[in-house]
Image 1 (spheres, rainbow, N blue to C red):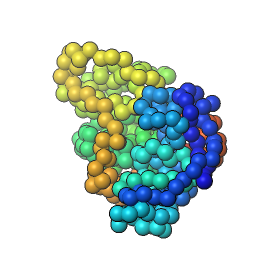
Image 2: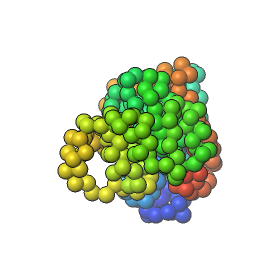
Image 3: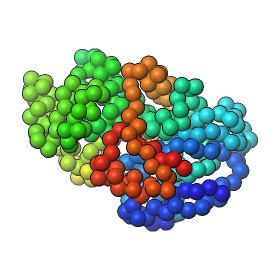
Amino acid sequence: MTKAIRIHETGGPEVLAYEDVEVGAPGPGEALLHQTAVGLNFIDIYYRLGLYPIPSMPVTLGVEAAGTVEAVGDGVSDIQPGDRVAYAPVLGAYAGRRLIAADRLVKLPDDVSANEAAAMMLQGLTAQYLGRRCYRIAAADTVLVHAAAGGVGLILCQWAKHLGATVIGTVGSEAKAELARRHGCDHVINYTEEDFVERVAEITGGEGLPVVYDSVGKTTFMKSLDCLRPFGLMVSFGQSSGPVEPLDLKHLAAKGSLHLTRPTLMTYAAKRADLLAGAKELFEVVGSGAVTVQRNQEYSLADTAEAHRDLESRKTTGSTILIP
């Protein structure tokens, strides 16, 4: 038996139920985890609202956590009881204990705590594929990162700066602007006071950008296209302001033969080799000090509804963890 946060229907934070859940023994290919820290992410809200498909109800939310392996099932050889591990993105994380496919687990280096891992696995692996695989950031690049003071934004901005790029970030307040400046942004645009398209044109001398990273969605998408130079890449990887409206593909041609992608970590980490390679690169760049993970909020798992409200209202910055 364990405590978990489940939903029996989609809706607002009020549908989050803190309740007892039975946990069985691990089957073939599975591991039983004792989880000590759980990550909070916007994708959790998308699942809660029903924007992402849910296999069945009730369902335990959450897609990343860290802890210790208690037991493994038949056929598991590279993960053993006692191993410190973390994972993302696998639905079912909002719990004290859980079963999980063992091939989704990553062993933690000695210098990475469970709390640190839960704060960075999903957001860090997302930043890794965005900046190293989806578009490979180079030293000559100028890039735009929306929501630069958010969890992914802070990591991606630091990583891009580490790679030698010039980094432009958008934020919604002066406090968030200062946070972004301290974490890799060369130019910070407060979208409540400035037009980011005009500022990007000014910064780039009218040339435009090779890539825009946009997790905001509805309110920034079309204007982000106007920030790109010909053949530029629009990376739309979230929708915190709402879903992007249907797009007439002729806009991509008219604005300079643009490219558009809607990537997910689920695809980029689907193969275990890719998951392990991404995690290795993430642990290395954090271990070197080039990227620091801002764990700025911590809630009890029982208070997950409050955490969701704070995340949705943009009261949070950096990463947030839940403690079972």
